Figure: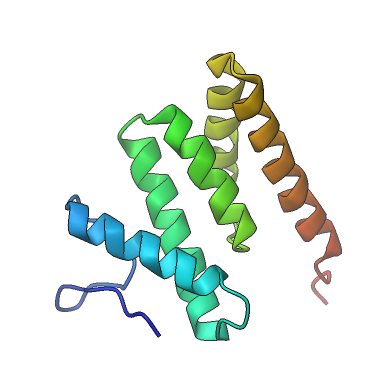
Length: 121
């Protein structure tokens, strides 16, 4: 199993600003998305996907944020509403039909997953 590099006392998916750490985050997402991945790898993948999405939003990388939104949804991450809205705005303002379709597909998956989740007692 792949283990991302971390600084002492850092969470495995802290999105520091180095290229190496971004690569580590992307590797962790891919490892957790593979068929047969362990539940722990899946959890790390979800956390890392959200970290990458937050990093893209923080840097104002709108198109990349939409792509990372789709990836986060595909690995089962619970994407915060404000990230969803940011990506919806980015996709709509892009003027790119493929980007908009990617967002809508991911948003539909996220809604379907939420509707299928068991309701709290």
